[in-house]
Length: 224
Image (tube, helix red, strand yellow):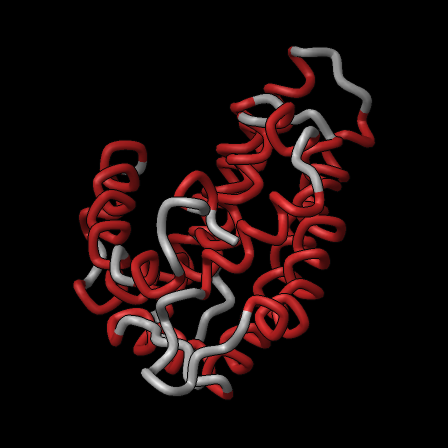
């Protein structure tokens, strides 16, 4: 699942936008966090690639928040058509899956995403500033093995600032203290969603679903 692009692109078309997504992400990062200009090119590239899999988890959440009524009103047939369209046209000639086969294989994964990751975050009714805090905490994850010690330290320091700003925002709104903890727990939800996504990509590979080479390179790197 991937945000507002669902329904308009299949998985191959969507995976083909990875370079554009990386460029747009870096522009936002540089504008909001000028200190990142000092990063080595290898660290910058690694952070951007690492974030792409998380972006695929974040976008459907944002799409559902922005269009909650649309998805609440979606019936079973519309949901099934959404799933089928996402994979149709991505199989090699002669190896196409039928609508029934696509749903049997992929619908359980979509239901997992929607019920275990998307809806719990939607129901939290987070404000935009809180959602942006989550996004940047995910971007500046310092636990990766493909970034330098200096980059890890920079990420750690930026995350401290983000957490402090998030807490200050919630205090100003007079939110309950538990809201901060629950907001941070969304990172774990998204991490579990990312693991499920990797399983989906393995299933796609098993059934010869076409994925763009740029995105496959990111998937391969994430396994190392």
